[in-house]
Length: 276
Ligand code: SAM
Image (spheres, rainbow, N blue to C red):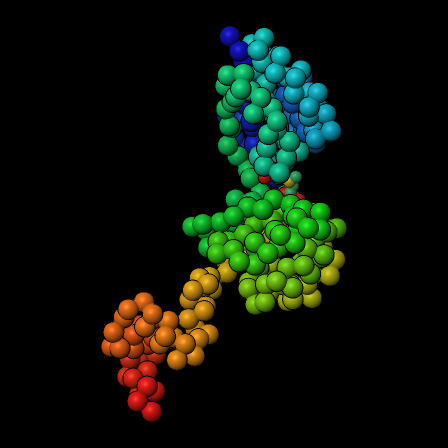
């Protein structure tokens, strides 16, 4: 029988942020596949975990994946951990998860810290619906496309960013966001944890030398997207608007009612304009 692939969340700064179940599993599995072995070793030492570990990162993911799948098929239990937080989220793992599922190997998530969720819950922004963009692309065309989507986004948008790229990203956001509020969640669970709130321009000014780890959260665009038709109707002259509905076979009274609704004014106002 195959072993299980456990996706184990680890702390994002504060070593206490790990579950009893995660620690037990890290002790019990046959092998830990770690994105950053040096970082993981600190955690293992802290909790006196002696399980053998090997590296599994972006640059050896394809080769390692085959090796690990083989071990899983042989019945070994493996825990996948990333540098910090929840593996597979902007971290390696997607490849092996997909392959394990294909091979009918059980994939078991072990919940714990996830940077984006903790940034979101304390951001004060809308949490009912949100969109996670991960790291913005460095490819100019793709980045522009993503920024265009963020501009129109009617849900809270969440971005991960590296400290040395934060300023540039804030400048890019400044160009598209006008007065929308953003929140920067910095150094979560660490000594210098802080939440900075304001418009992009305010935060760029406040925040000249970003240090540590950051997440950018962007308030949803509150403007409703107008349909092409709604836009067209708003831009029509009264005469054009009248003809538009006349062609559709509406009576004079119906047309006046409809124009008033489209333009957001009273029926009487439109009626008066037609009399004059
Ligand atoms: N898989 C991890 C997770 O979702 O919890 C995130 C890994 S991703 C490679 C690293 C990014 O997550 C950082 O660049 C930063 O944007 C964010 N991050 C991780 N830990 C953080 C922390 N303690 N405070 C703020 N942001 C953090």
